[in-house]
Image 1 (cartoon, rainbow, N blue to C red):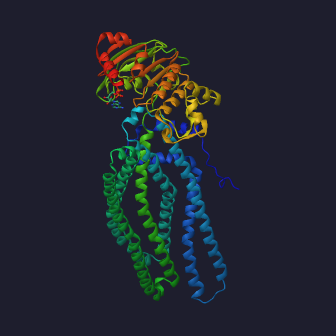
Image 2 (image 1 turned 180 degrees about the vertical axis):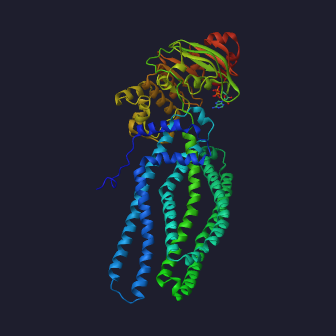
Image 3 (image 1 turned 60 degrees about the horizontal axis):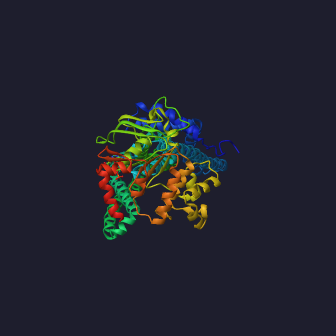
Length: 610
Ligand SMILES: Nc1ncnc2c1ncn2[C@@H]1O[C@H](COP(=O)(O)OP(=O)(O)OP(=O)(O)O)[C@@H](O)[C@H]1O
């Protein structure tokens, strides 16, 4: 088998990353809505397969030429054999005709095979680049964007690009070649009959314009309504629990029906108008056929005009082939525009700056766990969220943050995890400014047990192993035992290999917490970040969680956002955060003595828990 027939499209992730970095450095001069730039960028992906592209072009030229040769041979057969009634050379001409059509099929097949290969490989590369890039974007990027919208770039827009690369490029190419070829042969055969054939073009252009003006409006409407409907469906499915608790089914169904019928109306008119296109083309084709036959017939009666019956047959066939590429060009143009728009949306994400380390940042091997906030101020947008925060947490110390909702507790944790950059001040770990440490190496020394700890679709063992990917099964089980999770895991149908549904569906909130504690134990971090669950958990599970947490926190610097009295009281130090400032700090007893915010909160919580 030739090399070109073998599946040559293996890809190398490292290779793609390298290419992406090169492209990133080229992109600086490219602005959004820069269509030429977008096309050039798509070309930069395609150009890797230059040789194969060249073969595609050769095949396109070959197939277009062969499709012109067919009717020409038929015309020759009529003039030279049928009209003259001498059938001597006819069999060999028929053989040539048969070979022409076989070659035409082969050329078309190869051009498709190579082009689809190139386009699928290109799309795979762009998709990988996009996905890798999304994994490395700073958290702040996701704050500003709807997740559904990003998903749509990853799927719909990519699909758009893929379809266009698959078929449109070939169609555009062969349409253009066929059009030029037919025109040249027609002019060579009879300029007069060519002029007659071309008469339909203005009518075609006017008709197409009239239709596309209307269809494009309805197609846009259709896309918009489809997007809205999809968004609505996604929202109602994600929020099903809410829908049911508030008995909102009826109004939601009514709303859905309104959106659905808007989509239907737009779709109806878009399809109806665009359905006119082939009908119009048919009418014009038949009209041009009649004109060619009529005028050609008259010309054939006059031997000086040089028009034979064979020429008329060739023209009649060419006129059919000739309107098709025009039609295709018009259709493909719209698809091409929408694919370029899609590619532009994809490249926009790829061009977003990455969550990069500061220049000169170094990896860190070991952390003792001494954490300082030195006059730290921070705002997400313009509003100041943290104002001049100073903290000095010794290695191994456990500190808790309490305060009203929106005071900035989670924000402190986000800054410590280096998800966001501070606006002013410094965060120091073991005396070293975190800006000088590589983010990834810093985060691997931290463990997280968060309220909404994310569990993936997969087995329990895989989910725990997420804490340290090279952990053995024994180590995972040991961690689960320390996290008090072993017993409940063993009671499950497949034990450690029980599959969890999406986002940990199938297990309780408390069990979810125990699994995330096991995950953190396995990671063996120097700094721990705990965001205590607010939802109520039964007392036995609660005790298990507390016990597991105690084991986990031993010997590590721990930051807790605490909501329950016993957790808070156990902390070495408590910080009260109000409106972005630390207003009280000290041990439980110190703060009780101060009789400030903490004292009030304590009284309230005590009353609640009885
Ligand atoms: N990603 C974000 N973008 C913009 N503003 C944000 C973002 N996250 C939080 N905020 C705002 O920052 C403020 C502090 O939020 P933060 O989540 O730190 O409070 P918190 O003390 O943890 O509250 P809670 O106890 O309710 O979790 C709030 O006013 C919030 O609206």
